[in-house]
Length: 218
Image 1: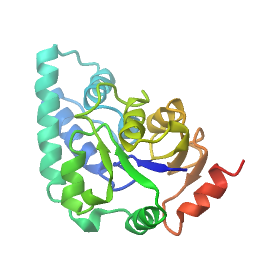
Image 2 (image 1 turned 135 degrees about the horizontal axis):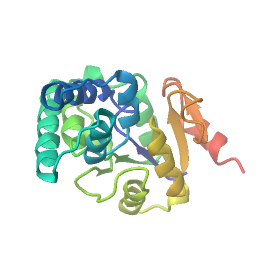
Image 3 (image 1 turned 180 degrees about the vertical axis):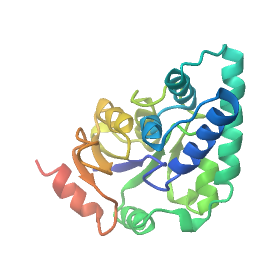
Image 4 (image 1 turned 90 degrees about the vertical axis):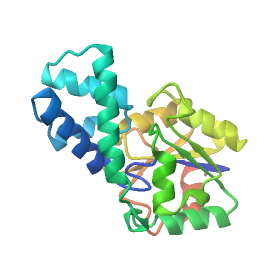
């Protein structure tokens, strides 16, 4: 166990509600229909382009590529306005302690997110320096569940994929980690993240040594 790779949304911070607010505003103001929070769950871990395609399919709306690009950019503008208000108080419980213990244990730390706003968010919440590498939407060409984001993270950290543990809250992210040949920790509900090696409600009271015993005991 040489490295931990963390998703951002739902693991380090919870920005899903910001995504939902921005997508819902787009659906309401530009597309002429509404989207539910339940539907928004299907967008977790999915790229901006694919998220828009899913929303359009949900509303039965067809757009040309130029308009789709305009709308995706507009949604991101609204999303950035919301996340620019984030502070260290938005870091999820247990994360800072777990990152410190990971560092103290000599385990490398990477971020693996499809978001192109990952670095600004980490800067706003004050923990960008906790990560040895940041792989985000500006460095990859394929979104999750493709394994590219995590394989690139392992490569930049200089470790083998089978020495890595992925922390994810989304089904697409767990699949991405599994396809990369890595151990996976789901953050959320066991009935949703059933493909993960283990599932936890959060990282409170978890120590890196606990994971080594659980995931690498054989």
